[in-house]
Length: 364
Image (tube, rainbow, N blue to C red; front, top):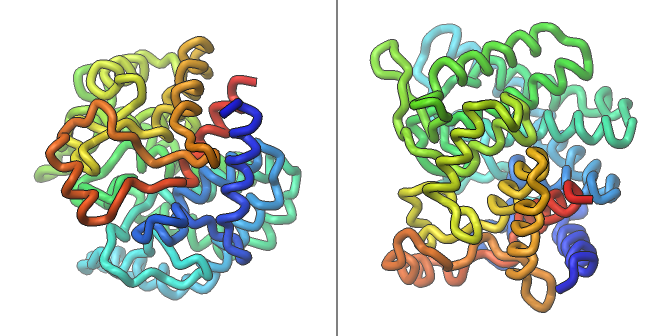
């Protein structure tokens, strides 16, 4: 499929799978993904903003407001417990995904994730920067401040990573989302406390999440000492550079991190992490697009274009992009187990369609 045709198809697929209230379904034909995630949704909305489909993006941000606006008593109760040093069960925190009509998801899932809450603050500020619609800040004020209170208090708590795994660790990619959200809003509204917290999070990452000159997948606290828990790399570490700017794309630590990603996770596409067993641990389209985006920002347009071509080659005749492809599997024996459990990998994955749009836009 040609690039312009796939751009049109991707926009159409995203718009067709946006609930009237604004939530984007993660994947319409894959039952476990029949919800809207704040993380996925924000990156989808940002892709729509970059594609001049700003009404779709704004509808999503209003959907987030609908989801969060009545949760002030809940966040206040959580903060009181934290201040009193009382135990907080993971189930008490906000969820990571919601029903398309905005209801809480009460199923068993990796619910306590902070990445989506930081990402949506970042995405909202990007939307305002692109559209100039600053009045949206006042309209969504309740949900914005609930999110700020939540992140300012719990940013350092162990929680599930962006793949809904490893809940007992703190993840630099998640911290990057929180940093990006607080910094973007702090700069937009000139709020020193948010900028100070963002600086603290950045210092925490640089002090505790660097091992052998590169970033690590996850860290944890043993006694009173933070140290790597999973000292390999994860492709989501690209987020520290793009889009959240914890470090520059050419920072020596990021360059060494990307070298490790290339050595351990790069084939034609990019895998998640070395120990990945989900559907055998294949190559992910959204991560390949993200790696291409990083390369474009670094000035390596040829490699970015190669990534774009590879992603485009995985589209079916309807222009649908899957979550991952079963190529260069890390654990081929686990692939049929997932097929038996959930069927074929998710297609279309709206996050894949979105990151194709972002990479394509970055190469204009």
